[in-house]
Amino acid sequence: MELIDRRLGSDLNKKEALVMINVALLCTNVTSNLRPSMSSVVSMLEGTTVVPEFVDSSEVMDEKKMEVMRQHYYQMEETEISKSETQTQSLLSDGPWTATSSSGVDLYPIHSGSSYLEGRS
View 1 (cartoon, rainbow, N blue to C red):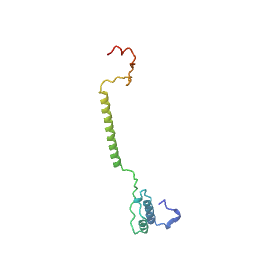
View 2: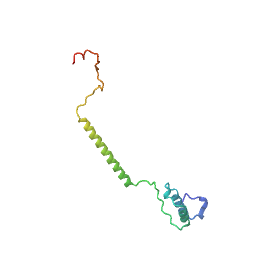
View 3: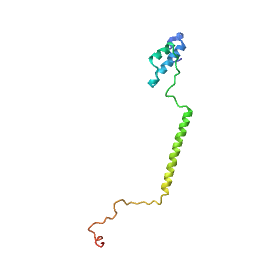
View 4: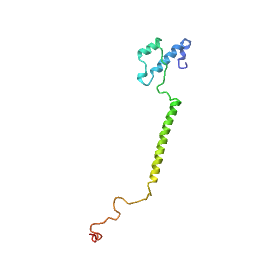
């Protein structure tokens, strides 16, 4: 009730004020199809229609939902770690690893005019 203008004083009908606040909250929903139509707003303010309870569509997830998500991502992480360890073990057991500085180009190219090729038939 601290939201209401103090200048209204004791002339305030608390029930009507709460209805107006709840209708205003319904009208501020981010999703347009969750906001009430103008005719239903008028009906709610006149008291001919019951004001539905305001439910914030961006509500914070409850603990159960959070725990389910934690478990899901924990299992995904464990699977990734397991795959990574398997790949590492596979690479380590492939055989001896030797370093090489050679590439696709011969280190000592043979020129067509060299004497090395003359003795070969």
